[in-house]
Figure (cartoon, rainbow, N blue to C red):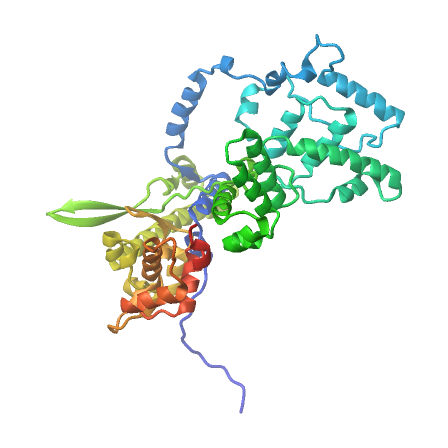
Length: 511
């Protein structure tokens, strides 16, 4: 064979920069797209958002003329003016500044085991600080506890130990570290006497910490947290003494027995009758296992739908109207003044670079429009295929795979996958991700198939209608589905039940 040259004609897809940008924009969520648009507006001078100036001016004017009631806002420090630590007329009382002065003197003398290593008690907010910012800021669990600690009459060592323990709590309000370990970390392993002294201060501070609100804070375990709350209820005398004693005895037993609701074993271990044990278990169920829950900063991700589905009546028939959400569609256009100036100065310096930026802005606008056009087409195809869902709910969902929508619209499956990921549809039944409408099918005795989403909805209905005293097991649920013509194994029922976050039968049994 001799090497030679030959000409051939072939076709292949080249991923141009414009196509790459189109694919990337298609798979972005609404929040990510907003960030991408903002970044492009800041980077490309030829790109402009329509209506920004018209909206900004009235908003700015409203802010400038909005009344601010300062008289209703007070600094946090004023809440403690009547506390014992701030009373100046009482003999022997000390203000917060007095405590700080004593700390400086003791730390300089070197007689204290703390020597400034422990975090000092938090000082009240500065009077010059904007009170509105203090009131609008989210108060964490540590700040809430430090604020309560300011009202306690404590020595410098006790205040420092309490502050150290407060800062050692986790987000749920538990003290995960042992007091010995905390003392060694603070005082060092070399001096045993110093470690013992710090540990004694920690033991006193722990009692003080567990007396603060919320009740149960500072516990080392779940059992201790529940017992602290039961002790607080016992002081209020709001429950029968026998029930409270049984509840405290239950918390001292293995919590696995309580989770399994083993009434007989708990009654025998606690020496209580079954009625008191059931009442005690009901009381424990109303306690808060996470004292710091309401102080936790939870990221609230607000879902903004990309597509809105509404019902409308036309000619006596009920139709579904599918439209894009105008709030998520960015209104972009090319800056006319800059584009006109570029056309008038074709021979200026840097003309090619500016022309490339202008073309980039036009491509970006076109790709944005193509993105929302594809989302709308896919959403309308999904609504057309899942008419039963919009009429009767999830129980009427039919099996649907990406390939069906791709073949119907003449698109690739990967494109449908990008569209349905992270995009949401607001329907009369609620807001769902587009991916929710796709699901595999289970065979039926009639030869057809039932959607896995419909089977999960049917399982939820069956469990909701069961007898609370005798809940249905997974095997019984599988038999009920089989009686309705759906072949579903027990393991599949267990998997669907876990996806619905429904407990097994032994934990659903009500007392």
